Image (tube, rainbow, N blue to C red; front, side, top):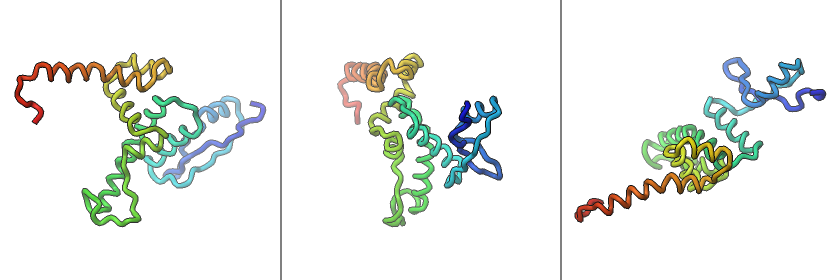
Length: 178
């Protein structure tokens, strides 16, 4: 407290307002103890999606976070990247690469998410499955670091594998797979 706020607060300038995007705790402390602070507008943020991506990437750069948390944060980028992919697709003439120049950058949503989080796309897939199918108890264990993503994934997949085996075991003999 004696040094005041040593790092400026990052803001997004939007419609004439400065919206705080990083430094919420510093801001509260400065206000509480009547300490001066500086703000730093972050350039290049044109849309809310840009801000969301900046915030999440900033968290990746600053924090020592576990695989589960890193993957969950990255999955919040899924919509952002999906929008970019769709925009690129429409620039290319609709549904494929037709009309796209070699200099255009196609967006592969799953790979972009994995790359942003510095995780493999397989790990991102596992985290998606866990998010969708795991119990709250399993998620709490992941939050606390009690179990790994791989352990949680195996636990979640085990009942699904048993269901598949049961289906095959009760197969009528006719080929139900075609």
